[in-house]
Image (cartoon, helix red, strand yellow):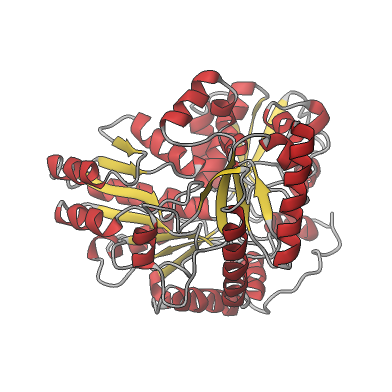
Length: 486
């Protein structure tokens, strides 16, 4: 916990030891090498350098950072965009936020290939890859089509990462709906931090865009009443099913009926449970999925998908525009994901089974205040309505302890990190990593509790380790926390 707080507060002792991290949040060391090579003859003292997927993204980023006043933009070999500006905390914050929320980042494999072509590196790192990018893309779309219940490959678009999939899809649909006079969107539930950032930015941008936030996903009557009250203005609804990190599933059937009658669209993301477990196509107009999770189960490749269920004319009509807007996956990322995705279904079977045993064990522990999982009370029936016959309750859940969270977390012999859907288990104090600004203030803590979110919860993703070892590590941590907590 000391390291996590140090990371969030930019403690030099912690930051200097952090060699790499989640690519949208931590600069990859390969990108540092790319910067050092291309700008070795320039004076970069006092300047920040950022890499983007292409020149167009660099130009837009420069505009977002400071209206393109102090920023400099150029293009490197291979079409890589570069943005430079005087180092300044506020400009750095805007730049980092742009890359995090748009997902218009450069793949580290692409950076490696640029360095190889420049003679800086001898060859790429050795790893298992499918031979050709076209073959890899076909394997990925066919596998995901099967997992989504028979969606044809042409209805599946791939993006460089899951965040880019959402960013480009949402803004394309928002423009389409605004053209029909529909500008009101609904955020249903507490969602992933960058999803909420995109919705916040949409509302704050010039124009009529509005976002109504319903943090209680079970307030169905209130949500339906709002949709009917603003029928001519409703553009759509964005939610995760289940939500992150509370694993809540709304009454999507009832809400979708009202939304479709009003002319709005349902933008749904089932990543947390995985589309292997839950089928939202009966109510979704477009389905977003981070393939970084479960498909990319080694934790070494980013990718996202945009899936169009059959018969959804309003969103299918935007497919070509969304496809043109997405940052395409880099060819070596496609080849790497295709080498991993064949294990997707077996991984889900294994981790569904293990997670169910761990959840059952935790629900009986007196130290646990609450377990948040897809089968929790009041949400279980909504999740069960969309659970596939061969699916389960998923491998991700969160817990709130009655006390000693920090001591328990430090004592727990689990791999620790902010992602999920990997071969190995992971645990993280999610709100500390995703919303430290709220967790670190009394007003923020009060706000979270008002929304029903315990700021000290821990989110788990169960992997393939023997379940007896996982439960043993949890029991050991509970024992140590009890001793240290007195």
